[in-house]
Length: 71
Ligand SMILES: [Zn+2]
Image (cartoon, rainbow, N blue to C red):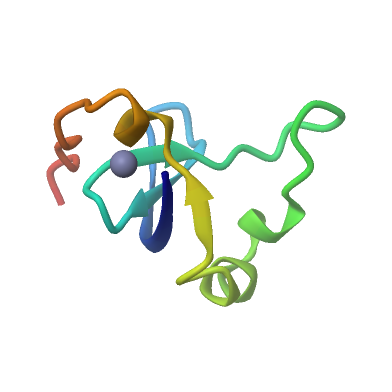
């Protein structure tokens, strides 16, 4: 299911995680050559992707919402 990005945070390994409108989190790693997402490394790049829809496999599986880490 396609879900727009509504925010971001970093996980304990310093990888960026997109927060989707459905309440699920999805890693948006920049790990060439497997995952090329240089935009995730900059504030401007991340902001420009807000609202972009990602395919959410957790929705497809009917998984419960992810809990956000403590702020
Ligand atoms: Zn979802």
